[in-house]
Length: 461
Image 1 (spheres, rainbow, N blue to C red):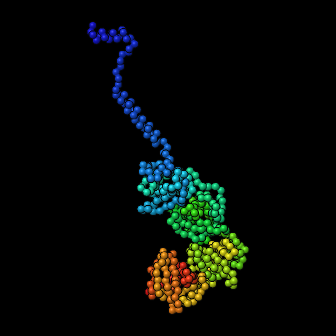
Image 2 (cartoon, rainbow, N blue to C red):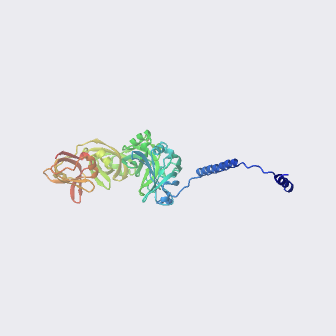
Image 3 (cartoon, rainbow, N blue to C red):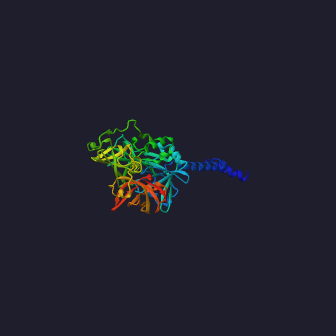
């Protein structure tokens, strides 16, 4: 018997519990190991992408270079109206968000094509003033600035919006920021500003400032007719929005939905009264006629004196520059022209202007320089074919022009707002001009104030 056969027999005799060995399939083990590795990696991947992205306080982003290019969520309140503008040939949206971690706002941008996508879904995806939001952003950290970019419409969540019952107010005094309110009245003093269309709504208790954010200029044709009507003096409007304190001090209503701007077919009623009965109608909307008598300016407001036809009773109508030029341009409408004024009585002898018309226009009162010097302060007048004796630019592009017609010399003051509309250079000595404005005195110097581009005409020089 061979030695190998003897060893096998001994195994079975002395170790009967041992089974015969089976060959190991190493290839199969390798495949199983590879499957386990790939499966584990896939599991880790899906666990990573399904895990919620962290919500990071804005405080941890500010100046933190480690967060540069990080993609994170933030939560906070939109602190100011959204703004749209063309930057580098592309549409850009800008919003500001603040949370409780820091008083600093985080500036967040969205460029096209994302900006257009957001505006196409503006009711659901455009964050407005007062909204509490969760936003997916990519952070940029610079030496002195931290800002971010929105990543997608899917990463914009409007968590909460100011809302409630429609509460109509006639003043914003005492109303908290981000509160949802409504008002109604006539449009006055519409003006375009960088953030949109700003205008006043005249109510029985005064004027409420309203902003239509310029993002609505980019949402399609639906905004155009609304912008047009809100840009028209005297339009009666019923609107709702969120209270926003511009620079923290000046309250205004920010419109957030075009559907909340309504133009009722029944306009506000103005009670027709005699001008002398105005003291009996404080806080009422009235309509009256009178003579255009004088105008004065103080702290951004024009006070136009309207007198009864017997010239024994007078009221001051408060107006903006654009309203004065539109209705009572001194270069077109002369002293004692008969006018109708619609407005709200704010005191026994004061009216807040809403709308008006010239019933009987008189030519501007044409006088010599000597006669102008003897006219009372505020009188609208015109001097024809006077010669410039000297001229200069003062302050922020204001013009001071001395003129004479042989009867005397008087100063003509042209404010920068008028200069910007003239489109001409400063008239030099020897130039012949016609001026129209109103009489005033400043630091004991007699002058004529020119408030419209029609009030300065250059004939030669």
